[in-house]
Image 1 (cartoon, rainbow, N blue to C red):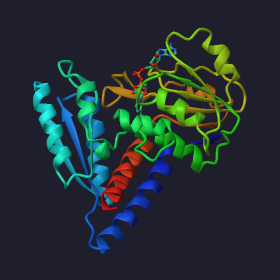
Image 2 (image 1 turned 90 degrees about the vertical axis):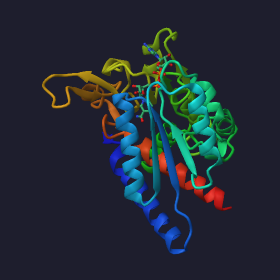
Image 3 (image 1 turned 60 degrees about the horizontal axis):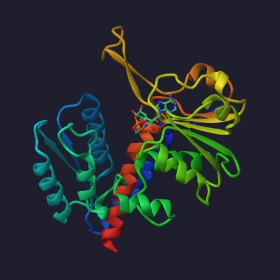
Image 4 (image 1 turned 180 degrees about the vertical axis):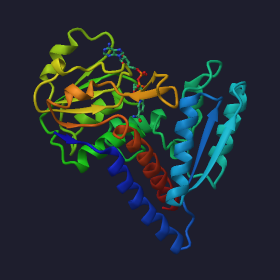
Length: 292
Ligand code: NAD
């Protein structure tokens, strides 16, 4: 069994980006600038945005955090989005999800300029991804593909079962795994909450990508020997014995499933850090595209 070490690979990617940014500086070019919009004070969102901004600093990007109060109106948020669209200093930006309930998420994401949509959530970018065109691929599926690539995991002709059909993980990764390419060329089954006999499907899978958000959902008796496991799930489980009052766990019963797996991602330290690295990669791409 080999661990797909997202922490290690994400550090490699960040080092590669750091070198490119230093070269940009030497050439007297503008360095990439990522902005993040956060509405409200959701604990997990604050953590994610905080680490995105810190990562920018470490690799030499400029970054701007726009932290708006919970009661921000949809109209005001849309104004902010338009400002970012029109600000030449900003190469790319993200609007951290989830947004407060009174704001229409779709409306906001649709307002983001696709050329600055480094999260790859805009339909233009999602559509281009589905058509194999150059675009911004959403950071989490992009990170999974990069991890598979750098560990040389053979995906060709394999049966991949994706669990979860969200717009940001399950759906796009099911498309990417079926695309012509390496990694890719997989035969994909996309399972979701209405899927019947999931265990029958996962037992046939060479690769399982789990993105549903239910702690330790995928058990050892649901997978075959030699399977590759990508665990996207991140759930905070309350635990008074921990300093923070919770611990983080994935969708996979790691201790038992890992005994049967040939490759497996840990949680934390698997897909999570890759997501941040690929967001930075997309921001670098945005800067380069704006230069050209
Ligand atoms: P989501 O929460 O929007 O949707 C969950 C999906 O799981 C749905 O499509 C649903 O049909 C499916 N599902 C629910 N119960 C099921 C069941 N019993 N059997 C089969 N399918 C079932 O999905 P999301 O936003 O992709 O998030 C999924 C998990 O991934 C969460 O834990 C989230 O925190 C985590 N996540 C991690 C990263 C990362 O960087 N590692 C990024 C995004 C999301």
